[in-house]
Amino acid sequence: MLEVKLDQNYIEETFKRELRKRLDQIQSETLFWDMKDLQKNTRMSVNTIKDTFFYDPRFPKYKVGQKWYFPAEETKKFLLSWIKEQEVN
Image (cartoon, rainbow, N blue to C red):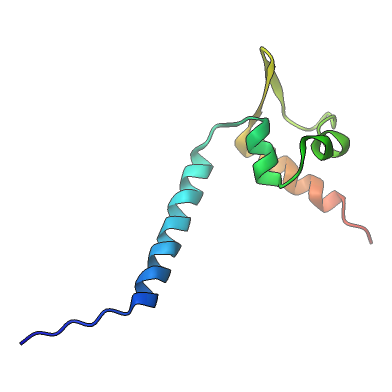
């Protein structure tokens, strides 16, 4: 007789790890963010975004009709540089 035992915790952790990888991959394939994506990815409100970096001339943004769009990869690079500049010595 063959008996198979499965470690439920191992299966759940493996599943979660793989799911995170796939979600990160999908996120990186996004070409443009809109304001909701920007808010979600920075964990900032619209007012905070506008008060801190939105009007920085280096911030990549394009208005199409009534909506703002942000090239995902350029925006990520800008945000990483910007946050480092905010560090107080």
